[in-house]
Length: 432
Image (cartoon, rainbow, N blue to C red; front, side, top):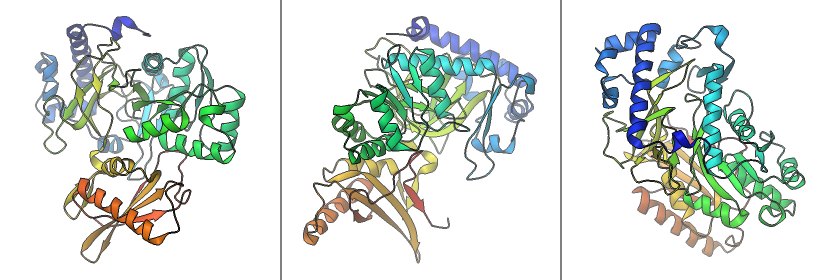
């Protein structure tokens, strides 16, 4: 089932021609009417006339998150302020926040992208969609909200928090789909179990649009087996617009609306393109954005382009599930470690639960990494020898996959913190 079959099933060569026309127009507009992009192109000795094919996008300079902060609040906007109908603001924990503005057309194409995505996983009229992303400056809640209404679903804007009440609403209103972070869905399931409610057996909740943080196939399997929910990955960032693109029912890669966003994959260090199918850093160009266009924005998420055709019939480009961020990488004793690697390893161990924390510190001149792990109730024991054996097993598995020793601390079920928004699983106290 398609929302916009003309675009979603457009022949690949026709889509590339469309992308080139949109890119050419975008480059001319920004060169002519935006000081930042004009100066950046001049500095890199590139002119719009140099863009003669889609591959020439590589001649254009990259854009970085620091550029957004340096031009805060509105120096990157390309429309008059009276045409801005909404602002969203991302976290400013590492400096100035990132401010994104939207025209009405920007909101319309954002909603269009989500309508295609929700239709691709079978959400539509008759569904009750509970949106448990945060509403407000964060883009997640409002994005999913308008997408759900566009496809004819009934939307319940529950936001985060008050989890017991959310469980009650899932039962009382016959909620069939939920949009939230995967960590919050697992927390919601824990709360439901404490209330004597089985999400799998006592509710109609069967679909989840999960994003805003990396999550593993093991977590997807747990959500399906434990909760009876088919979980789909949803992807987007504030700089793009917000959550926009999802897997389809095939769950074989995230479909990207090629008429809206152009994706490149580059080596995080050199910035050069990687071979097709190889992992690297995503670079995105927003082809239709009016208020705050993006050309070759280094988004820092790690993924890869998928070349095979999807069985669903959509010809849109697909990216593999996000496996981490290049700027989230930990360097511990000279070894590159991604939190997603740790999660992948832990979730392969049957005795390990869904909650963990990673602590990195410096003891004298050496880096130390400690991983706190919750143990499943059926595997947790007061038998110290048994727990020591399990701890040694987990440490051995981590060392095998990470090539570095990490101390493991076992925690009882429910002992580690739960997260209502994005999970914050890494605490690095080193001064680097």
